[in-house]
Image 1 (cartoon, rainbow, N blue to C red):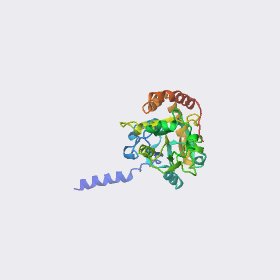
Image 2: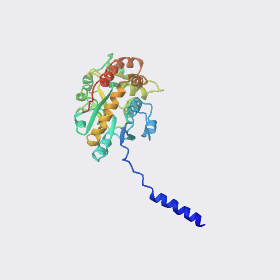
Image 3: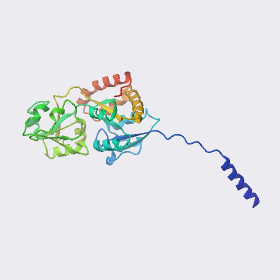
Image 4: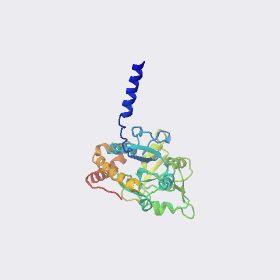
Amino acid sequence: MWKTRRLLGLLCLAVLSKPALAVGPAEPTITWNLSDWPPFHLLPGGQAPATAEQLGEGLMDGFLRLVLGQLPQYRHRFVVLNGPRAEVERKAGLQLCSPTSMRTPERLAQRLFTPALLAGQLQLVLRRERLQQIAQGRSSISLRELSARTELQGLVMSQRHYGADLAPWLRPAPDGNVQTMVAPRAGNLLTMLSAGRMDYTLEYPMVVGYHQLGQPAELVSLPIEELGESPVGYFSCNRSDWGRGVIKDIDRALRAVAARPEQVLPLYRRWLSEDQFAREAPGLRRFLAQRARGGPRIE
């Protein structure tokens, strides 16, 4: 018995005399705010993935996965917040980054931006049965002319950035022919359009295509004449000391990914028709080549 007690005493002494292991600094973390916006993001049940490996098969899911591969020094967590809620959380101190941002003067006061991809062109979406009545045989449409037709009702999402080229024609008019509404996801407006709740809305063709997967194509989209070059989509982070450090690393990661167009272009091809991809691909290649060869671009 005394031998057992002596052995236990020696073991305890060894444990107590062993120097404590040093605790390293906490692993730096980026919290990514994702949007429930098929097919840019495909979130099962609209919920944020628990890990990067659980990102979906949407265009921006795949692109973000490539970018995260260039950021192994960070732990990555994901949340799903709509635009207004995300701004409230930022003002309350939550440090957020977003992979799907459009740059505006108002947002520049709150966030830092770095260019990521071409966003593609929004198009006018309407019901196929109203195509001749509204477009009158044209293959493209003027939103300026359309917004002046008081017999038609347009509906767009409030607090969504549709671009400076379209902004003058999307202000709610006194006669009410263009209205805005809060919607949790873009697909809600397409459902309302299919049901005849309005005459037209604006959306990306790939979103319209995804909305009609496995269904009759009741909705069609037309190019908008007022639009210029395809706008750039940005990654953004809080305008803070934390955000400045993170956005520099994200910018480097984006340039590394842009140098591999063979990995990026198939992400678009999956969700665009052959004709749409043929129109978009040359501009995408030029943008990626310029981004890969250029230096840091942070605003």
